Length: 108
Image (cartoon, rainbow, N blue to C red; front, side, top):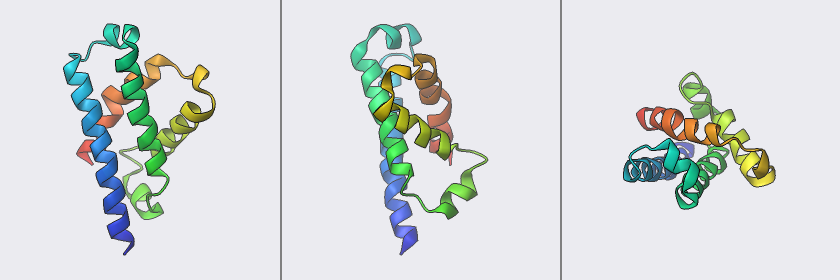
């Protein structure tokens, strides 16, 4: 039963990953545009926040089995910063997550 729940959560997370990839492609992976285009910035930020939110519902087994490839704790921490300390978020960290960490989830 738990595997089915994990599967559903992973599907949601992968859907957000695909959304981030599509947005990055639409903007040709332009960091300069990311910095200047509020819609681009917010779309990436919201999708990352949702990944962090959804990841808290994954079983410890899934998180433990993938911890060397994916920083679920990092996504969770980022989610909390988005929700509670948004002004402290570093644009470079949001970008790095989108470009480096999202592909890692997709590969997993």
